[in-house]
Image 1 (tube, rainbow, N blue to C red):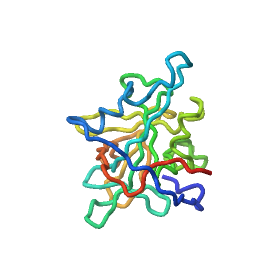
Image 2: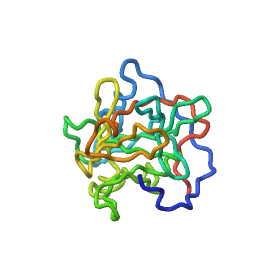
Image 3: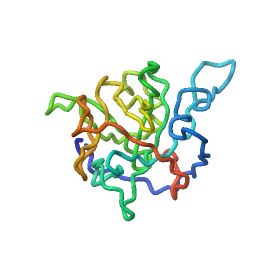
Image 4: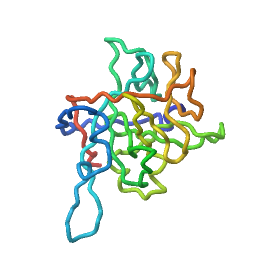
Length: 217
């Protein structure tokens, strides 16, 4: 994964509204991220069909071989899950653009750093193939973008057994992945196998010291 494009990321100091996530029975990580009326509310029955997004849900992402995802100096990495390790909190928001083919799963946006850095998949000019990047963009602003503008931020979340894969909407066949070796950057691959693992588990974060709000500036 390429490092953060703008290394001078300034994080906001405002308090963030506390999340009121309530645990769902059964498949917690998947049920409330599936497209449906629970994710969006219609502003007016007689107005346009514009949808208003609700608050994002918060998760820790776990990878294969007992690894968790952390943000280290602007780089998203998979590291061994230890007591002293604090997994990065992922802010996850459902997207209604583009419409998701059933076989692909649920289209979602993902962000870290309190929703200030969004996961983005696009071709790396130096490598000629897609790479996973972090863009300095507020998560809640993604829903206002047009389809072509937001497609690179969208990942299809599809259930595989008890875990999930995350496929780039902009680059079909390319999935978020981790390496068998610890402390390696999270990347995207079109060749899953022994060296690249594309399955993740979503662990809901029930309490967060800071809450999610858009910056006033």
